Image (cartoon, rainbow, N blue to C red; front, side, top):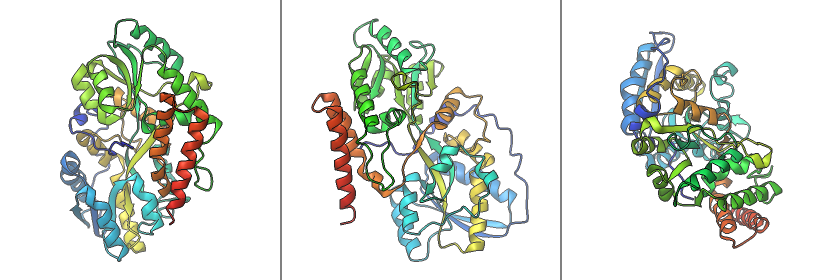
Length: 414
């Protein structure tokens, strides 16, 4: 599975994507002497993210809470997970660590992070996009607070598509019209790997796992999705291959009017076709499934509290985590590091691209944090490839994928 790194957005995205955020000032930043103590924070941020953390976020926290000293350690991201696991398992490590969603299940299972249900009230949780909070629940417990998110949406070239399609039926009509304007012209260039198309799979009602964490892909809903994507690939004006470079090139050169992609593509797309010509919209509803809403994967960057923190230290850590994921801190990270804020208190209404991603984020599927998810990517991707190539029927492909996933899950315990 060729997965995009979560949240690795170019610094240029800050100016192209979220520069127009309109939250005014640091309304809540003022000296407060009620908190006292010391905290340690580990992260794997570099570039604009690290600069914003060190030059804006932490100084603002210290101004509000001068009695709390925070010591940070920047660890190369590819080493951070292992370092935290090793030191936390031996009773050491930091009080807090910033990490991606797919660490949560593994850390929680190993009892390296602690649940926050008793430390965070409902009012605080109500300030985040619901899907970003749901994503951080594992085995019924909340294990982190969400800072930012990402998902895929529909990018479109306004010179070719003045208004984005609201349904797949409208998208078919647009694609056919554009195909008629000349050779090698496409309405939609769709990367047909599992990650980019999963939103439509879930829109058809398919699920990845059953209640026992076994594969649920062998279902009529999966078969309906596979029949739909096979039919779509044969319609005029559609390009459908599992090739990210080719897909993005078609859009940047004006050969494709639309693509399904994530916020990491914004800077390149705007540079290629002009920021004034770039539009982003939620994925169109699925006409073939009674206008069901697609629900693509949603990834979350979050902050976690170590299981080694005693009750008083955990309370202090959570106070920082709440502030770090609050409007003041997230405004810095949105403006200067290009993050899509999980906190709804950051106003993105003045920026249509950011607003589109937020709208899509409200209809998204949290990336599963269970260890079994690692066994899904390759068989699920092969399932789509086999159907599109004509090597097997949708029914056979769904069964083969589920069997392969379950076999891999069974081998995890050996």
